[in-house]
Image 1 (cartoon, rainbow, N blue to C red):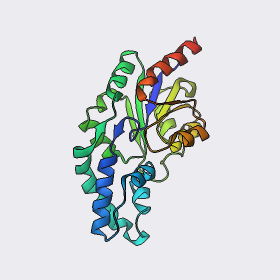
Image 2: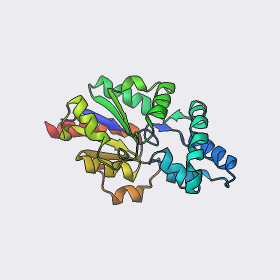
Image 3: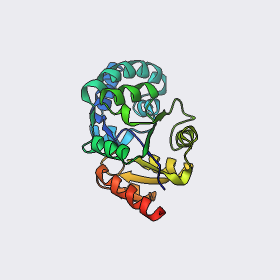
Image 4: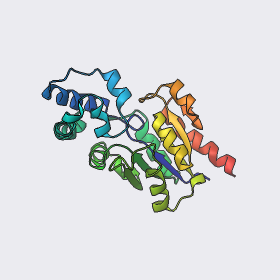
Length: 218
């Protein structure tokens, strides 16, 4: 039976793309680089903030870029981030059904905490695991097994939910079922190519899928 559902944050539960775009373009302007459009930003996120900004500047500028980006982003998250429609109700319904919930995200721990607290989502989760450096970043199988060990859950009792191909790969690498949600950073065709267990048009459909998994287990 499914006992635990693990979520990615950005593009899955939370829309922080505007906050990311504002912070990136603030940083690029300060360093003399051209502005980057939202579509490019959406496609570039999901691999940690250092990997993100490295895509838009010379290597020699990355250290200064992070020093500019991170303080700005701390403020931007509070102003521009929002919960994806239906996510809060879904989390509430899952908790009422008795599921354990967790987060596995490439977003740095500090910013994940700010985001989840500000949006009132932290209370739903039994554990939050975020990549601290490149050795922990998805698709490497680090965050998900860490959660399973801490919560004493077996691999076949877990569903991992994300919006990107990197999330699907992370779930596969960790040996757990993966469900992808449309509307984030990866397209439907990209997600189909990496073969998650299911692809949802809306996050609200997750409860129904989880319940079907429970019935099959019985």
